[in-house]
Amino acid sequence: MPFKYKKLGKDKLIRFAAIATFPNVVELDTAHKGKWGENFFRNDQPLVLELGCGRGEYTVSMGRFFPEKNFIGVDIKGSRIWKGAKTALEEEIPNIGFLRTQIEQIAEHFGEEEVSEIWITFPDPRPQISRIRKRLTAPRFIHSYQRILKPGGIIHLKTDNDGLYQYTLEVIASEGLKLIKHTHDLYQSDLPDEVLSIQTTYEKIYRDQGKNINYIQFGF
Image: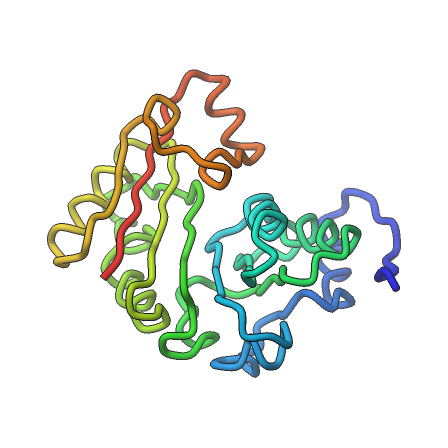
């Protein structure tokens, strides 16, 4: 039976409160650590995260493409998560979930080697020098991702920000990570497939503005 939810307006506080009633949303709870497949999805499929998922457009699209994998969108802003969670419930997509937490706490929510893949799609580039440590590809975040990724696990970055792209390449080199693929202009390369071609609302805006889309795939 489809999940029943109340129709809501655009009020952020109302949406934030509503996700507490959604069965596909976990808020600030570490109870599933190391047991997401067993406790939450009730299967042993590979687990994929989208960090800073916003409205969950990428998470939901990947879930549609790959029913043989489980997907969790992670963001701290409940009013944003509401959109993706509601869509997944309406479409009855069982392999999609959302976690509301800070990315800094990601290793508190997932066990060692529990995650197969991580996507970072259009994160805040934090261009100020004083905020470098807050970039989602800064070494302190990379070390957290390494703890939860399986051997051979992959991280993807899509960004319109050339500075973040260059910075991430530098981090990959300095940390001795494995650079698998990268391009300064995704849609002028031969890399796009059905997943890389997914475009969020913001990505469409960036492309309409003539911005290039950077992409990096790397691992440990």
